[in-house]
Length: 456
Ligand code: HEM
Image (cartoon, rainbow, N blue to C red; front, side, top):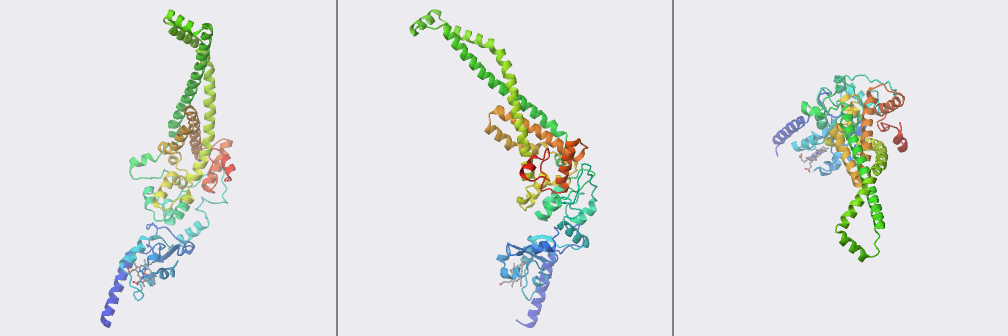
């Protein structure tokens, strides 16, 4: 190859590299509009091994863990740059003139960007130290029942944290978010406060389903609980009535048998033959005796049925308190086991994340009926599978009634001035939001936090 040809091909290669590299945007000059997860140098440091390998290029951070073993030049070349900037070597045509597909691979593995402005550096440092804005975890914070958070400045919040723009529908932003789980959890547990309810969807129709005023909960679930209570009571009464009627019938049969005591079976057959309708008369006599005792039976089964239903109802109330704790701790705060995928982050956000992100949003404080219907379904099925229907109905009635108490109380803890016990629970619950979201899961009481060692 002549010198001229090699110079020309080197120039062409250099231009190609420049074009390919240009396809990869470095950090934008307006960081707030480029919604990329901010990554600190400390975070970068923790991804420098073959099992978690991050590199940077033009200020962006790429996770090349999966690609490295397939690198045509060998994984050792990439490992050398673990946690470091590769701009020089990637674009160095003397080392290797990387094709467009090399830059494409980088693009597919983008995880975030390094901070540029002083504010971004400061925000990251604050986040790492659990600083002032990040009140979701702040041991120093003193929470009283009069705690009143101040409103968030929407524009500067977005500029500073590059998380969600509260001026725009939130759900699509969570879905498109390029930040990872760690950053999402940190941000979502840092409460923001708006005057109005935040918007989840652009479509007013969809938006309607995401807003639930507190009174919807008693309106929907209290009648269902009452109907189940009534049904359990009548089922208990019907069962008791059946048993008592059977006993009365047995007694009636025994007494009529004694009065007509046949001396021999041949004699009985002869009497019945003479009477013609002997068996019908016997049945009528039996029924008359049962009817005579019916009001007595009813009077005795009604209080017993009520007592049985009340016992099941009380069991349901206790079961709800356990469910309240376990669902809050292990489902709503499934944080550690949550897969680091947009779909799961979005589910987390819908289920409970939004409540921690905007804890005072009045229309996102109680569960929409549809959500509760989905959550309760497996538990009520289980109750019907395990217990006779009357017992199951009584238990479910108690659990639903306590759920209504829980959700209305939850709303009040956030928004009302309350009497003594509730004031204490208010400070306790707000501490779960603003002090340590990994403890204090009980809302109606601290009992299960105390039992399982998560008391705040
Ligand atoms: C994570 C960043 C990297 C990516 C995504 C990447 C990607 C690729 C790809 C796709 C190829 C195949 C040929 C091509 O398409 O250009 C390649 C080849 C090569 N790369 Fe990289 N590369 C990276 C980092 C590096 C580094 C840091 C070096 C260090 C010098 C390097 C050196 C080479 C060499 C020498 C070849 C040619 C191998 C051969 O054909 O025998 N690469 N790279």
